[in-house]
Image (tube, rainbow over all chains, first blue to last red; front, side, top):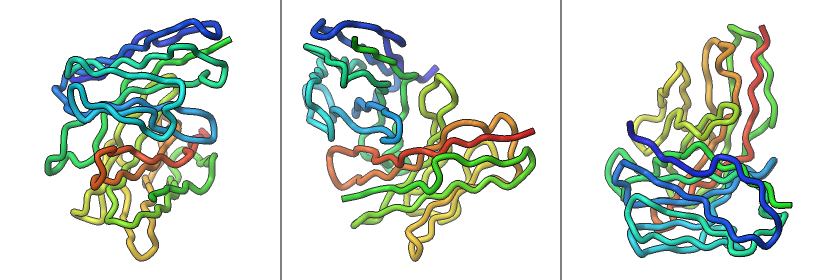
Length: 116
Length: 115
């Protein structure tokens, strides 16, 4: 089954304790992205990756890091989490530009993070 | 810069009634537009998309949307609501001209379906 998976689905942590949220896709997609969802703000892009070893900042990158060492994986790293990073996080992936697939992104189930 | 505005954060309809969720966009280039649905405790699922082909787009679960350039709108409709349609709906636009390819989402509309 084609899917985007994220782990963990729920996480409670304390300020300053480094954490990693994993994301993996099995559709051979070139493009991957992280979003955070906050009430009343919709989803905002944190980081994205056009392909292996190619990453760049989105709209709200502060406090986050990413890496793309393999095509299927795109982990999100919070080096020193703070309470304002409490949010619902979504990983997404898509093909590179090709007819019929323009911009279509497939989303993981989400990771709900609480930073105390 | 692109943006999306969804009018009405909450919409309530009766089962069997027409569903109309409004979305207006702002884009300096021809847009690619999407509607996603989010069921409770789940990720986002693509309902339908407009990518400059037919202006009336049909999606899953009986939903459709019409792209109207003159009104900069992409409203989502369904002729007859079902209880299972209760969810949050997001309109989004993407600019494929930039490498970022970030989806710009509206703030969402929560649909309630009353029995």
